[in-house]
Length: 150
Image 1 (cartoon, rainbow, N blue to C red):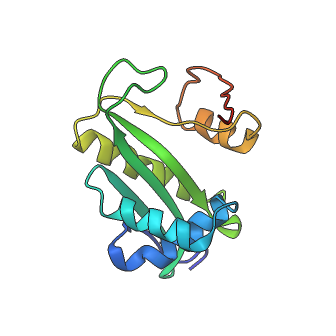
Image 2 (cartoon, rainbow, N blue to C red):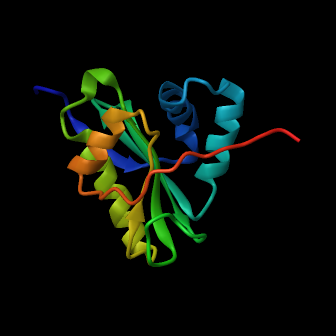
């Protein structure tokens, strides 16, 4: 079968290593153990979910979303479903996997009482910007955040 058998399912505790490996590809500046701990915490949070994309049984992508109860830039309701991260292995891109993962996140958010769904990306991440625009998101705002040590 061209492209292999594909499925998307909700990630479980036993998927922690697979989720962490994929998340490390998305967020390479993180340390393995720190990221694994964070992913474990999210997996056990009832207001968050990971969806795992598998091709021929092998993990090839994931989406992380959660319900945010605080104000989300550009929205008018609360709670809001929020796409925290989405990643598909380079060899599996342009096959609709990310769109399927996103649809799962949107459905999960609706099932959990959300009427709006939001996300963000870095200003210079043009690939992410294009993905968001192609999948129906509207740009709400652009900001630059500041910090300083005390």
